[in-house]
Length: 251
View 1 (cartoon, rainbow, N blue to C red):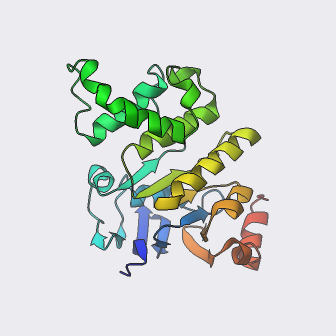
View 2: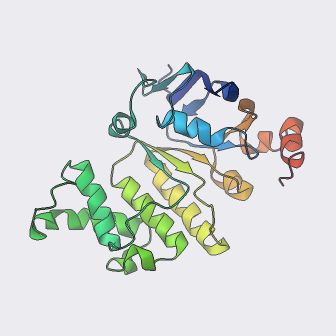
């Protein structure tokens, strides 16, 4: 494995009772880049994400992260190594405040998240870091607001703040723009651009404007296999890619 690449797969394959969802995928994600994984519905993008983050076990193939084979490692072990996933559906505690949500994530990083008997005062040391993360995602004015009261776009920002609390070296984003309005898309795009400055981002995303704006490199999947790879300017002009999207009703 080259030191230039933080994540590599070889022959990654997943079968479900005879159906091959992902076939022989060789993915290479360069360190400190934004890498987009795109393709029509049913192309295998989410299955690849689930294989990388160990929610699924490969039928065949190998996954390497930072030079180590993680093919048989569990999800918790992957997160401890610094590869953290944000889900398509916002996953925050709805009735905790913005500050409390981020503080829980910070406690988890310190392995004290289940110390429910600890006094409020004992957690004050986490406030400064929590507020720094909250400011970083543009939620400084919402510290004491319950997550359930936030707009959908701001919930996504909060989820990214809680993810950053785990100090990830690599961030996997599953359709970060799903369900967002135009204004929120711009806000989350800016946020992803900022957080990618000192870490690697791999994202599944359908919004091609976002992909074009943020991505350094793109991998296109079709029917579970890699169809094309490269920068947006090259991939977007590939006749096979155009046919894959137009042929399935996608713009």
